[in-house]
Length: 84
Image (tube, rainbow, N blue to C red):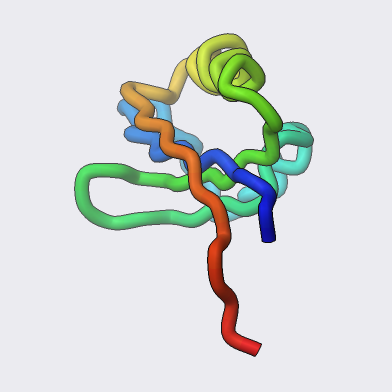
């Protein structure tokens, strides 16, 4: 339970993927899970990276290089307890 994981919230722009099939995320090995969200953000990605530099590399050189990302917000999470 000592592993840290990065969470990236994504706001789409008008070029957002128009498909209900999210299989394209398989091409990004860093992404462990993806959720569609409501509210201020359109999608949340759980990203498997080990350092802040690796997260920045993913967000700025891969995710933000798409034509459908308007904004991102990144946080780190760490599991500290789990129900049996």
